[in-house]
Length: 202
Image (cartoon, rainbow, N blue to C red; front, side, top):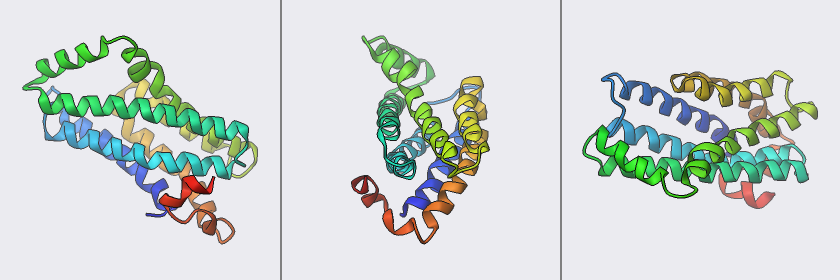
């Protein structure tokens, strides 16, 4: 998979997670079950793709100290979300019902440091890094001024209502279109052709 395709696949996987989450709630209870596990796996795969995506955004923004700090901040957020969703998947597989799942999740979140790092502050770093990097690109006029607005919208909507995650994912996909065009341009494409070379290209 090329980096340009990763910029398409990651938002689509987030969209899939949001849609599956809504479907999972049709019976009034979310998890445990196939929908819960499938949706969370889609989100985890999106997080994996965001590692080279953030590093590529750093490069497009000039690979300076600010851009590098933003990417590293994003990686910390990815780690927090990765732990959170892994916990959710494991708990969903082990629990017999929703009440059992809630009890197990509660026991984990009550462990020292887990709530602020994994569930509260940590995940915000992932979204903040995206806004930070795309704002740098907007300041450099590599993307339009409306692009950071769409990324910020994707960041805010889940905090308003998690059922709005699909809309946020669509906003993120639209915001990535200018970056995809840059990556596919003759001047840029050879520098980051695949996911495996994105991080090492620095």
